[in-house]
Length: 172
Image (cartoon, rainbow, N blue to C red; front, side, top):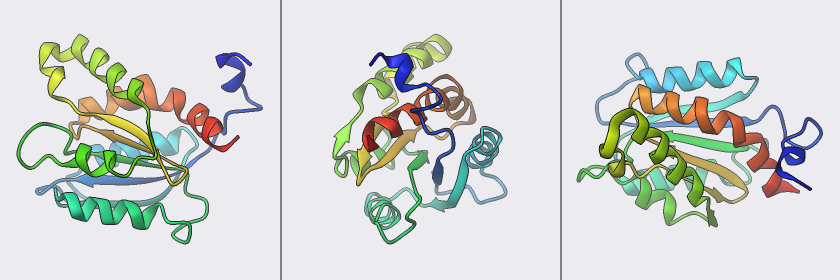
């Protein structure tokens, strides 16, 4: 079966249930432009939002939250988690370490493609992004930078086009 058949109407799930996590020491639900954009964009594209939270930039806190969210008894219909923020290289950025330690499988191509597309917009500074995607407990986890432009790039150019296909692949 070719890649187009995997993404066909009969194979790729059209509507997934997604939990959104914003990592920030300064944002709240009123000022979290990226989180608000994610909720609106996913809903507009027929995906369900199972939950949304803002966490402080803390490795242990994020890992505990992911383990809880991805547990079988949390929400049986959860398919994916999208994390925005904490993917850079500053001392407060621990998202990659938090998620990579949990991944059952990492989808390396996501981060590579994100950095390539980001390079077209911001140049060589794109090397400092540690955007990633992986599978944990049969859930898709996307980890993307927290800036609104980066969130839009990841969602519109990659995630919205592949999330159903990825879900199909991990559940077939």
